[in-house]
Length: 588
Image 1 (cartoon, rainbow, N blue to C red):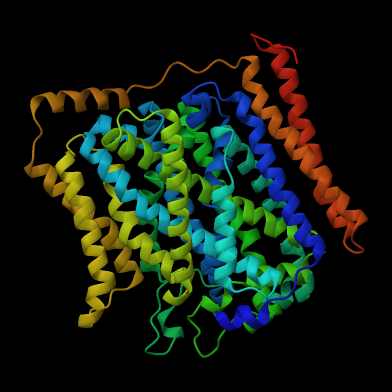
Image 2: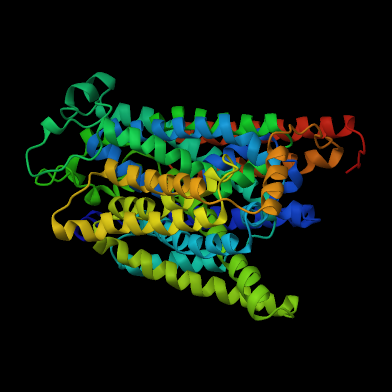
């Protein structure tokens, strides 16, 4: 990896760097505009329960979307071909299961934060378990995101700076960045990022096909087995260990059901929708995105393997580490000046939003659940503000440290799966099971989380010392089935008291009662949505100015920009018209 970064990087065009800077500033300013819509805590954390289903769905999709999408899954698609897309389709299956069986339940819970649900469903101790159990997971996942975007930025900027220096700068930018507009700002920036990244990736596919000489030339020159949905062990000689078999994909789907079902940001988006029906619609939109979009943002990387195979190591055909920076190399070769910077800027912005949300969640948890609740119960709001800012800095330092360590741990793909296997399954399974089974007790949750983490950590770090090797599929099944088994056994042998059983029965009656009240679409409902249109149109008009700065692909940039302007203006016009027809109109 170090050699690839050192030799493969090329100094970026100043126009691309300027586009990156302008785009990031635009996203920050755009987020701040939504501060005027924050009237209460529910506005801040759940968008007042008034978010359109398509906005919530896009935002949920972008919650999983960062530079890691192109670094982790992109490197798999470049090295192994179609199985990178198969992995995304497996995520779509997991999301479909969650949408059908859990979306309505999470909407009916009627809470503003997942930790509030845990205290209501169980007790304060379980809330604290998840508060502190989630912190390491958030730090490690944030480190993965920062590392991924730093790899791409380092490859784009050039080899004049070390990768660790870029990591430190990227983290510092995210720490400094402050979200002003609550969930509405997050939803809006996610929509803009989705729009930009979608257009960039949609254009990458035909450009890649043109560069390779057409679809026929790509198919004829693709490596053997490149279009297999899963790996075949017979294609690799011993002692090479094949991970991505059909057994793996079965385990991956099971794992994704619990990961997505317990993902706090997804739950928050379900809560932000106006109705149960809209919550399900938002989930179905995520399924559609994960079914169609991988063809466009992984397909070009598959084609680029034929165009430039230098990021593949024939001596180690299962390694992905050397391909982590391949996306920016592809952008430099295929895109005109300006759009390369825009593609990188969109990934930086998406990654920054993801990591910034994690930093703020971690800071809020430590400040409210530990500092204010246990250490300083009489602390003033000013003191809590200072404590929160200090916590963000501390967590930023931890994220930087962990991101700098990833390169020495075998690359980001290996690192990501270690974190997911050890923490995501054991933490996610009890969370999801608690909204399904009324027999789950607080003691069972404690045993499942601690036992699951212990077993998964032993499989990852202890068993190899005794020559006990588990496949990736085996690790993921253990990550989900061990805590699930502990939950079922513990719930069968323990029984809560009468008062607690009555409280749980009341909780599940609420889960089984459809919501009949839907927030009214008054005029103010259309304000934030219309503002999404305005910001989209402004960004499209700004991108259009690139035609005056570049000498090639002006038609491509013009089409790219005009689509954004038309979409933004149309959305604003529709919202303005409907706001005038809705009750409670406030003329602007």
